[in-house]
Length: 324
Ligand code: SF4
Image 1 (cartoon, protein in one colour):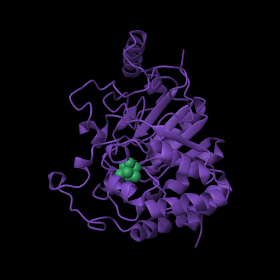
Image 2 (cartoon, helix red, strand yellow):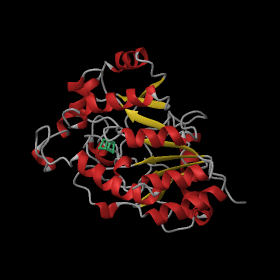
Image 3 (tube, protein in one colour):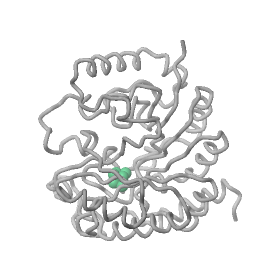
């Protein structure tokens, strides 16, 4: 019997204007555009996913708003009647995007680490990111664009996440939750469990059920389950869902949950709308900005210009949508 697909992450690529220390996808300004998913691949998989019963989709990255074909991908998802969410750092969210998101009823998700800009900016490794993100999500809220916020507990904000949640709720953001660390990407080497190499640790236990993550590196049961590739981006999702790799992963995860090895196994740990998952995982501060990562310290050093990203995106998306 063919399995259903309810929810799909589409990780468009690894380019991002920030470089968070804990980024699950190893994203940043230095990542090449050649690492992006081709729009043709996204559209082909979207068509198959729709046939398989897909209800909801989340575009994620990297920074998805910097992906030149995001508007085209959103349009394809909306045309199929999908519930669409964009997980973004919101720093590139300008009036053009707000118009599109409001018109198409797209939901947003983002991470805010602290009410203190200095703390947030230390985590994103980018001076001014807190101000940009907050201004953008406030603008989205004024337009009625539904926005979900994750407050990730990391070393830099340890003990203050509750206050941050309260600070955000007091501003009218109702969908705010504290999220936890996953050992993926740059988060893999972070404390406190850097010595534990079990790749299933940190997964919620439901990542094999009716959901898949399409990424430039392959298809996975979840964006965080990167050690368990179950297909290539070029593979038909019908074949992926029926394939032995996904079946083996499911069996391993079920055994693990049956044995009580995963405290997060449960019916509500990762619902199809992804509200239990976030791309952000905490990290220790010693990885945020140091010569060992080959990354210069300083607020603006080596960061990709947001306006350059916008120009590139606008040229392409305007062409796609026939806007001159
Ligand atoms: S966590 Fe998100 S905002 Fe931060 S570097 Fe990764 S993709 Fe960019």
